[in-house]
Length: 465
Image (cartoon, helix red, strand yellow):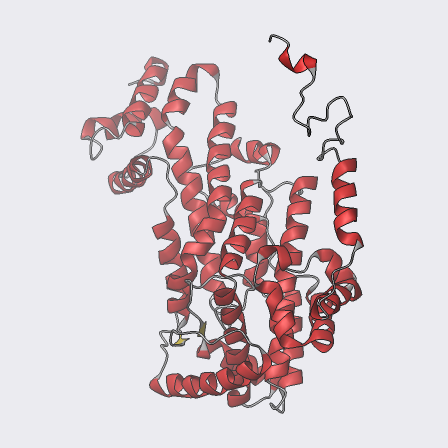
């Protein structure tokens, strides 16, 4: 067919067939048609591979392929092929036993019923991926939707029907790319974490706790501290974290809901994505991958998002500050406890490469910036009223310290000391009532004409409606 004789509708019709998933493979006639349209020899094997990928994306109904994320994460986590040895399990069991005894002296929160786990990196990926998925799903959906919308905006009017038919394909491309990036991040993070609670959020299934021997061995080597001391400290910290979440049953849902609420507010920078879509090549997704990895598609946080992030940071700092103080009290017999604790604090403040990559991918940094201030608050409370009164603040959500308490521990200590003496500040009830009245939440007192306390009603009460 001569170039001037080519009908542009032929290519559009061929694309429609491709995007509709019609046929399991290209026919020889279609391959010949593609060769004539492009003026090049078409590799049949390459075209069949492209067709399989496209039809796979179409068959997904636009859903994010989280199985792809799991495979990518496990590939990285299991690269060294190492598993937990029987000797490591025995050493950790001994560390857990002693850590439980020490913790029972430092806190009244009871021991856990389940047995500890010594995890490999792959085990950690499998156990924690559901939480990562819940955190990332809103952002992944936003990326996929925005990519579809941006590509539609770039297409000419006479191609809009074709673009609408390609919607699921574009969502599949964006979702698959995001899932692959999440898998890369979680897989690399599995090389950094030393325990289930190391990231600061409840990643492990409810009631479970674990240590990754493979990783804390590297951590201890850098400090030049014997492995048994590092194992004992890490085990104590992990147990303190797990005990807290088991005691405060509401806390896990409270943390996860704040994270997911923040993630739902993340939106993609449509200008940046439209610019990317104008030159997007579905056969070469490297530029889209780099954009996702760098966080270039996420715009600056809104005021509402920043406020939500501040609340989350205060919550995580309050949790980790308590864990820090309880762990310090429990490990005071450990010769190198102070050095290990400071290394853990610095590590949490800076974060590792994979944690920073997670922040770029979902727009969320999990480092509690006020952990030292929160730890100082918990130390002041412990010294003033003791562990039992301190730990009672986790009994109900309303009792938990606020960001104001982190700023001014003295006010919290004064309230707890007054409660311990059986006192209740007389002004509290009056101040609360006055505040509600000024905010318009409490109706004014009835006038004498409106007062029906004697049983007499005002004549106007019987007016017809």
